[in-house]
Image (cartoon, rainbow, N blue to C red; front, side, top):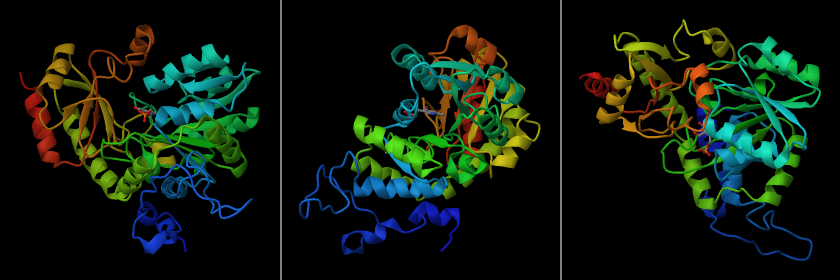
Length: 382
Ligand SMILES: Cc1ncc(COP(=O)(O)O)c(C=O)c1O
């Protein structure tokens, strides 16, 4: 039976929890490392939790269903998910990545450059011709964030698919910012979708998680082999928490987006704000492309204050909103990308991208929007 996304958030597409003992309404926490064999060469389907665990497998099924994939692996956090995909590439490979990218991903790419001899070119992937020009003989993949972190640049996924087809590349998309509730990159040709499950999927700022979802079974098998060999598997208890978090993904994101639209408009009318970067604003340069490939705009806003002092004052004065690094949870968080999420990035590159001392990033939560605006109002005031 085909179901809508709100139902998939709660049961997956096949109600995986129905197979559990006593017909438990929710998936129990199988806090177990190993499973008895019924006989030689026989298995219950579970042998050892690094390879498969019932709690984690139910979570993987739900995320796979949400992302329209053919296989999903739940990892300890988002970085482990991205690192696992990089293990697909031989040394000497070249990857083209969006130039505006989570700073931790850039740090990881730098690390594999040293350890695996994999080089990365950072390109403004909003311009497909720039991407085409950057393809080399040894290019193996495109690595995209859309909208990107923190500048909210939008990349046309169908255009990236064309380039990937022209040159036989894998298309990898980090879908953390919009989550599968708003965007399914596999439907637009992505081969692999990665997530920081720590963010919208889990949604409560209390658990780290990551996901790798594949478009084909063949790719999933290759990744599953690396996964069981290297072992970045999500623990049963954390899997349970993420499963629980996903049950409310739809209603959380609807509320977060509704709040974000109101706050983005309020920020825009504020004389102390010089720029608002939110893909839900109709004059955002990526508005049309984002609309074509997603069902919404999400709850992430970046904005630029008139000077550094204003940015610092806001961070010091917010009361309901918390000055902290992360995003996607029910609590609103405000981040200073220059020193937090993107502190690792070379200062010249940061400057070029616009990640300066006047840029703040807001992850809008589900609090009452008037309270959030009231908090910002008092934080802006001198
Ligand atoms: C877009 C994006 N991808 C990946 C990550 C890494 O995820 P994690 O912190 O779960 O390792 C983050 C973390 O902030 C992120 O914002």
